[in-house]
Image 1 (tube, each protein chain N blue to C red):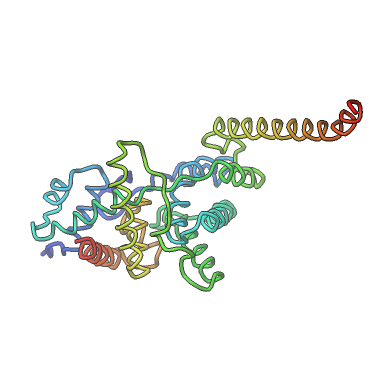
Image 2 (spheres, chains in turn cyan, yellow; image 1 turned 180 degrees about the vertical axis):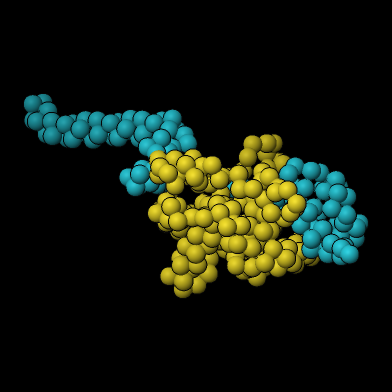
Length: 120
Length: 187
């Protein structure tokens, strides 16, 4: 003789359905949840909508990928190598810009007094 | 999604089994598992540690430990991902122990980038999300872990049982209690 599923088991089945993409009403009906237990499904829907997965920073992904590659894992470990290339390119461009500006400022400062002396 | 084994609806065939076997023969194949689980392991660490830096640290330790131990992994009723999350669970416990207290910041203070949509809808969604995370923060540790592993990482009750060292039945009861508490808090 089989025992009927407990409320916790039926709720788990309903959560399975929800996570599989079923509408809340369908998930509750499929799992055999009573209307009185609908608040549990509503809470599950809120949790599902609110707890989005948090994105991993590309630099962290690259650093860890590089460490794992060093231990023997595939060198093609990055999921978005293009994103890293773009990040690197932008970073380099900013670096070059800042350096050029610093050189220009420094040159201007050092030539400033001489320039003023010439016009005295 | 997992595939059910014939005759036992609770047992499932591990969808990662071929990649795990490939990685056991040649570590270079571990990259596929890394790409598949990086976000999920990071999400688990992030929601429990409440800090991006600590989450990155725990995620890094998890994957380094997994790569180092992949040769010893045996499919004895526990899926690869439950094994991987068990390692993450231990790394989080170590981080919390080292910190000497629980989460650095409550989940309420955690910001997660919103997806696209109309601004009014996004504001409402953000407020709802804040309310939920505040409520989640009041749950007992084991209930919160079950909710995160189930809803953020998509693990089954059986897999969560492996991660937390509980029976699947106990995990279902924890999930029920957690959702009942959240329903009361959100009402």
